[in-house]
Image (tube, rainbow, N blue to C red; front, side):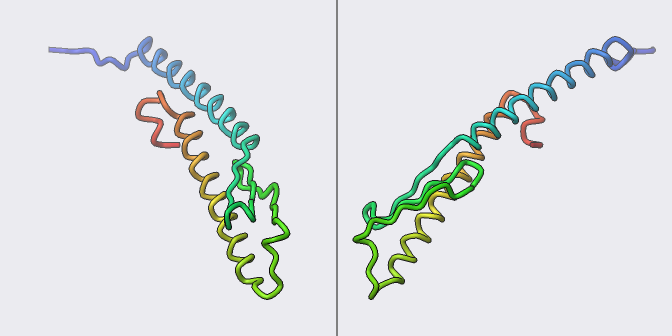
Length: 116
């Protein structure tokens, strides 16, 4: 007994159109996520606020602020450690934001979401 498959002419066109629509939606969502990352600013502090670092969601250092009382010529190493801690924390925040934004961009894409 012959049973036609579901991938004939009209059904195949429908699947292709659906895939194209999903791809367009994904591209739009990813572009929005990239723009949000570019505009995001994440700040980390150390030493009770004596040092702060601000980065963009794209991991560009935008600002470093060091209060004068954090500068001790006899303990430069402590200041270096605070700056390093701030930079690393701010970059970790940017990584987390990127995962969140890109995850949201692919949400609703069904099985395709995990591919991007």
